[in-house]
Image (cartoon, rainbow, N blue to C red):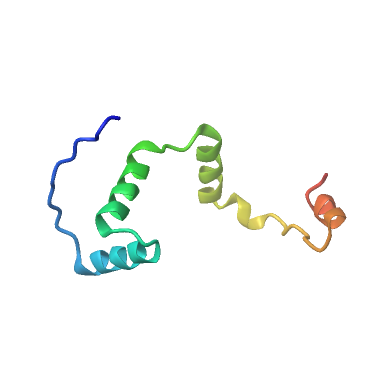
Length: 84
C-alpha cells in the first residue's frame, strides 16, 4: 500500500471564502482540509474532453438563446420538438 506524501502549505484566503468552504465541508461530513484537497485534486487532474469543451464553448457563445424550448409534455412531443 502506497502512502501519499503530504506537505503543509499556508494560503491567505478571504474570511468569507473560508467560512463558505467550512459550511460546504460540513454538509458533506468532511473536514475542511479534506474538502479543499478534493476540490484542488479535481481542478488539477480532471480536464474536460473535446466534446465537453465544444459544448461549453457553444453555451458561452449565446447561440443557444434563440433555440426553441423542448416540449416535455410527452415522449412523442419531446421527440417532435427535437426533430426526431
